[in-house]
Image 1 (cartoon, rainbow, N blue to C red):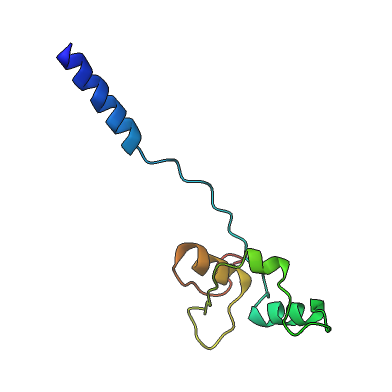
Image 2 (image 1 turned 90 degrees about the horizontal axis):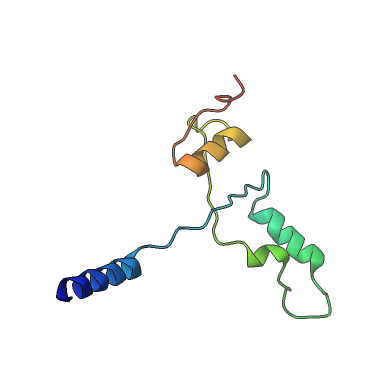
Length: 99
């Protein structure tokens, strides 16, 4: 009986320690949508009768931002190169995907 109780207690303890499954992550990239766009939208939507800018739909979802630059610093990053850098953390060159 003592062995059965010990086995039962170990099973309960291991079940309590098990990590829950992580939820899926949805990664949106607003192509051409920088902070200037969000500021312009905020001013466009603002109620001029108030002293403070109203929040927008984006404010609930904006958790962070990142800036990407292509492997060649003399060029502007294209969409595929920036998405690759954001998703993998590795810079790439423009036109790598659309050969």
